[in-house]
Image (tube, rainbow, N blue to C red; front, top):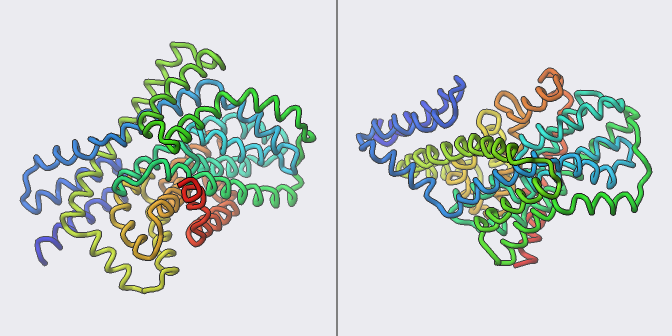
Length: 430
């Protein structure tokens, strides 16, 4: 066995062993990288150099700002207002509260950018509300956790910033624009699935549609939704970078939460900032340790070997695209979202571009694949949060989620094989 082959076996073998014994993912990434470097006789100073290099990026400065913006807006009393807006839009339909849940997630996702935050905040309100109105608890939880993945696609999403950096500096503005239509498509597919189940189980309708109520709720929710406009139109219009727009959005979110909606006082702001620091520390540790792992992979030519192995199986671009999705779905079952993006992007992106997938389109595919992974055992963080919020057994929730998995897979296939879904808006707006 050659030295490089042995190092690859040490790197990947130790990593997957630690993942399967439920080691914290950041430690698994770091320790496997250290063992790999030791097996090659390289100095351990490389670890510090690569960790600093991994987080020394201007684009990554947007991540803490987006996380802070989401926490401030999420704890600032906007959840109820977005639910009321969604109810005015779609609450009149059969299974209206399920539709409200899905549309509210689309609105809220554009503010928080986090499926976990969406599930925890909206779920704690909507799941008991749906149960009180006659919906089954497992169905209510399934709708909540699956619709929360819309927030990963709808900008501003800090996971898209991480992907843009991992992919070598792809335009964050283009990624933001590319997420709107796929997010809406996912919402539409989940609504169709919810409607079919609601008709079958005779779930109730809401109040009749009223344009007057819709306009009123839209005026109340405008201040929350404007945060998204500041970020997206500021970046796309070239007024400021993603980092600058995120910083402005934090100040705006603070003003809206404290002075307009008055859902936060200054004591609550400090509590929210503490939560931000806890979340950000996890994200930055993952990014820095994944930088070492990526360095080891690149030095050992693993991306080139993986690309050759996968493309050697077949030349059919359709089968290769399906294989890429399958790999990401399997990784989603055993790893969290950020590590998958950081580790898999350098390996799989060259394969995706070789079969004609645009890096932006592949980014949307990767984010949705990772979103589905958040709902699948054994490491489905959103699945666990939804089960805890609803106080329902995880097995029961998974069973109720099966029809929605189908909706999400159909959406994923459409995004994969119809480039216009993700590339339409970025192409249209140049």
